Image (cartoon, rainbow over all chains, first blue to last red; front, side, top):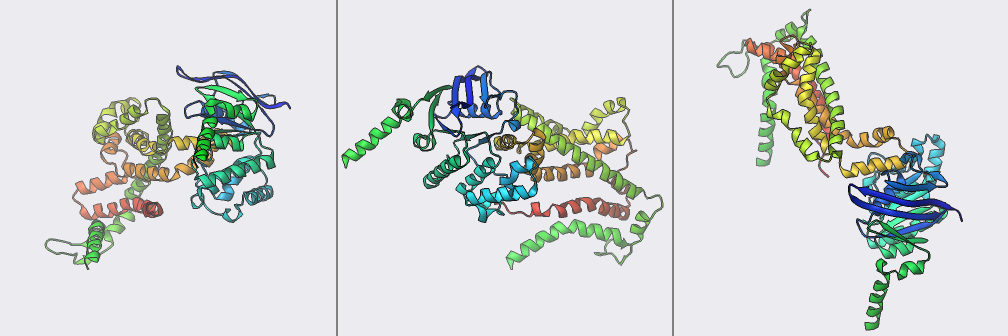
Length: 244
Length: 255
């Protein structure tokens, strides 16, 4: 399978502080790359460079064979989702989802049809006329998804999107993300510091620490790597089980 | 009983200057020790507003134009400067420097910049007064709008860019609506700052730009309290209108 995204030798420094060091990765169409790492490891900078919000110092970025570096963020068709849903407070739920279509001057009947279908898919049709502050945390995150998905992004970048949700809502959102990713054949990079979340949403896996990215050929390799902490957590639960 | 008395007293205290102004404008032969005017008439109002060479209405127009221009330029400029401050590596120092114009009274500031205004051949002109007022209003708007440029607003802007907005579209469709409540306050307050200014305007205009406030002071100087009261009522109209238009924001309860 030819790669959708190819990143080669990406380097970024803030002053004398290196943030990304020779980061290389490949992502195929429809894949979800789960990037695990602690805070300050360079995860957000990597996503911002891919989105065009930061410029790399060195390295190559190709999306479907197109050099991304000269393209401004609005021409990349790469959407960056923050930890906060960041719904526009002056717009209703419907208009939040319609935002990208309105920017692209999509005809009104088409906007109505596409947004209605998206809201139905995300189970938000009853909330279409509500203001963002009238929604729960999970509902807001679903609206943020809808707003991103409706413009059919070539690549979706998720920066710990469920970090502020409670455990149950977080689990629901992970399942919803998997469902819509498959439904819309979305390729994405999903950054998280939660190994369980990485294993749930990812189809490919990487670990980013101190600006250095390790890609794993198989899920088992990711699980076995001691830096991910998965083996030690498994050992902990086994010891709990053994004490029963 | 006590719960009604206090708001009533407070209401009376707030309304008293306006009531007195109205009485002064309409009073005839109101002399000590009468508590209220013995007679009322619209003579002073008619003589001021109905005059053929109506200096007062011309002053009102000049004041509206000057204060409106100051409000728009200071608010627009303040938003841009506040953004530059937020992005600066030494934002705290620049923010502190924005308070410097307030270390000087406006009259002194006007006296200090007067030589430059003369060299620019702007002395006694509306543009000269406008520049002087902007020196006070722009830092004020900057300080007022500095709190808008939070990291979250930068995230909103970045998100809008990745959703397909150009920089201009992100500003118009996202940043401007987000900033609107603060912009409205800045417009209102810089308008009032310019509208009620007397000292700076009087020095820089060298008596040639007769705004409504300058005219009110002239009537007060002539000890013509009735004409001063009529002119003051006119002076209160635009701020009262702005307060009325701004009432949803002013009466909004904190969430």
